[in-house]
Image (tube, rainbow, N blue to C red; front, side, top):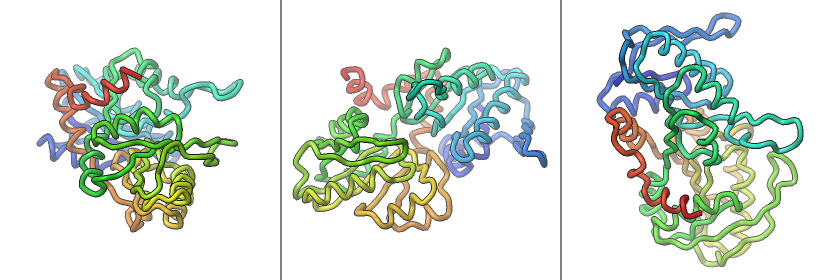
Length: 317
């Protein structure tokens, strides 16, 4: 096995490398003065099983291009198998046509990865599970729920799991099933992109410690408004868990000013300094889970058994 780290999330790559006991392969990934990206693998790759770890987070286009060029370099170096490990799959929110004359960017990115030479993709909690069908190569869509379940059980043993919108009900139900918890749903209407308006809550939240669950927190608007709505309905406290902490723009300031007690995110995206300094934001690592999945893929063992309960719930829905 060979591990290569792009520039998007070096701390996560180092943590995975340590967990596997496999050093990172020497590689140069840099830019010229005109921002053109250059990649050079500095070790022999012929016949190797190679895993490239790269999230397509901000700056999304640069990190995506780094990944594509690294895949191409490995293909031309006669690597036996190339697996793109993408903890955060960018452009996943553009998984269908929202209006006339708009792209399906998630499909385009899938085509680019396949044409570049990737043989397999490992990713975490795709925004829409049907994106797996956009690929003509195997895709392992991993779940962060084992990590979250352990953390929630430790900090919120008698919580009420809350989906911030109708689209997250399946994810919330799967988590609640593992925890033996009840669920509630927030019904909201999105007037325009990036703006969410909370309408009403399905379920009794009064006197409960509520835990919101989402896959991506970007501007933070949905979670902040959901937290306010829950507190207005009599919730004792509101915390939130999100797999991918994009946290763009003034998201950190919004979270600090919100009714949220805590926001817990994974390290699928490398955190900026302001995120690390925020007292309301806490991190849990997916590195051990990701390392186990990589090891199983390399040894041709089952990956789905790591997430058996989620798979059953998703299949039923």
